[in-house]
Image 1 (cartoon, rainbow, N blue to C red):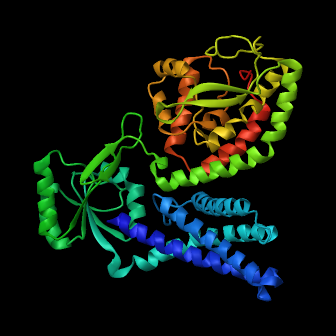
Image 2 (image 1 turned 90 degrees about the horizontal axis):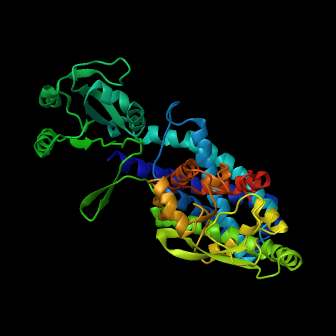
Image 3 (image 1 turned 90 degrees about the vertical axis):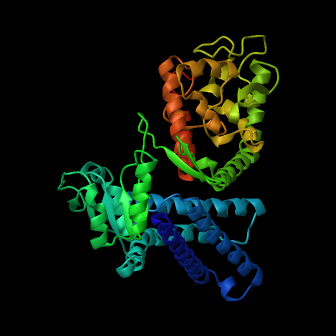
Amino acid sequence: MMSHREKGLRLLHTGLNIVLASVLFWVLAFSLFTDLRSGEFFAASRYLLYNFLVGLALAMDCMRATGIRLSGADIQPAFAVLRLTFRQVTTTLLFLLVFFFAVKDATISRLFLSIYLVALFVVLWISNGWLLPGLARLLFSGHHRQKALLVGTAAHAARHRHWLKRKQMSGLRLIGRVGGTDSDPDCLVEHLGLFEDLDTLCTSLQPAVILFMDLPADVEEFSRRRGICDRHGARLLNLWDYSDETGDPVMIQYDDGMHLVSVRNEPLQSPINRLMKRILDIAVSLAVACTVLPPLALLVWLLHRVQAPGPLFFRQTRTGRGGHPFAILKFRTMYCFEHDETRQAVPHDARVFPAGRWLRRFGLDEFPQFLNVLASDMSIVGPRPHLPAHDYDFCQLAGTYKVRNYIKPGITGLAQVRGLRGLVNSSEDVVKRTASDLYYLEHWSVILDLTIIVQTAGTVLRAPSNVC
């Protein structure tokens, strides 16, 4: 119920953001460029198309968002506003860049786009920080606020304190708590009585919502709760915040009349999120494949001719998404003679030719994998793929290792930018890398991908000693 209100608020706020972004776009365009003021049709149509892409990017960002936070010092810190704004502007930038390079557009001004994106960041930051809370106060005031009666102990109320405060910003008015025998000065509401008093209190208070903060013990208990709510015309809401011993939340999904319980949040299960990630993959891979890869391939070919004649590329079977094998591409860094491919390279490995050590140290041998990304076998960012034989060994060391296979493997990943690269020396290395990969899987965002890509550039220049 409350989520529907918040979704509606988010849609309204997104619509206003699109209007603000469009007004800003045309104010800057007509202020800076005379060809638009003179009525030049082709230029104006191009700018109109870019304005449409800005609106589409903001709408897509709204669709992929899973929640909303409104206001309050401990509810919406300034960092969260900046993070939301940065995500919106980054999404807009990706849409514009993909179109810009796809059609090789020379009409739109690069200077204009740069100025516009900076100004858009400021406008959206103001909108997210002040307009959104203002809309919430305007829409969820007066008779639009709903009286809510909490049912549970003081410990329950204290545990859900921050969530309850956020719901008050979207129109929930807490009128009291029923249940338990204790009063807690830190709780948000007054303790009104025992659970046995619920029926009587509902008659006098007439709540619109009765919020139970613990799950019913059995079907009979649930039926009793439902009966009380139905008699008083109150909506029944039941909090579910179960977590396992690791603290990870349990996820509940509705599917064709059934409620499914899963143990992991997976942003990349969303088709919209997968599309966003794929757009980023293609944009970056095309840029690298068309500019960096050809001269680098020529350099590696020359090094091969001098030090280790043989094929330019090295192909090896690795494990991909869903456990399916694929052929990974790398620049060859070893001499061409028979050797055990499952044996990890070690410092001063005799199989690696001199220039190959340099290629491996700075990660230049990985660049052909951008072709794997274009072929959709890999992503720019994701868990690093391993040999099937190594996968079997690593599974014995980390019980959640195979969860990495939920998503495509990547050229780089969160583990790599945390310094967990190169030779695997111990079970602790496997556990740490797996933990980083699972964190990425459960917290994916375009911003996280871009952050990892930027950090990777710095990480390869200070490769750890176990990269060989």
